[in-house]
Amino acid sequence: MKRMIIFASGGGTNAENLIKFFQNSDNASVIQLLTNNPHAKVLDRAKNLNVSALSFNRVAFTKTNDVLNLLKAAKPDLIILAGFLWKFPEFILNEFENKVINVHPALLPKFGGKGMYGMHVHKAVVENNETETGITIHYVNENYDEGATIFQAKCPVLPTDTAEDVAAKIHELEMEHFPKVVDKLLATI
Image (cartoon, rainbow, N blue to C red; front, top):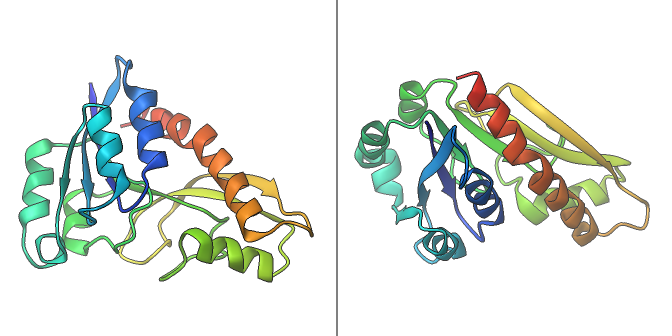
């Protein structure tokens, strides 16, 4: 049985979708959810789905081995960032090489990097008159949104689309593709 840990910072719809997708799987399960936001709605979602959930602060994540030791003890096969807004520390990435992935709400390398998340991305897509956008599922490295691409899915951006319209299209792509891509990736680990 493959073991996954999800990191999230906010509402947690992607985390919830992943947890539900793997709930009845014989191959993999989400064993824990971790968040940097003690007030994140994702904590309620995890609790409602009977998944252990913990919050941590920046010191525990970046300055000490607290989060690293928790991860090492849990022995995850895959660490999934699903709306997690902090940069992952290199010392944790080094311990879990090619085992940390992220979903980004744009077609990287466009609209990636520090500060490019959520509505910031969708507004930039609309302001730049893009004709298409999408999601990128990628490995996490020491730089924001620069790890190797695993999968991309595209959708059109219409001239009349608002950032909210783009957000809705991206959400649909995430809900449809993220769990399936994770499932396929787990089969190769």
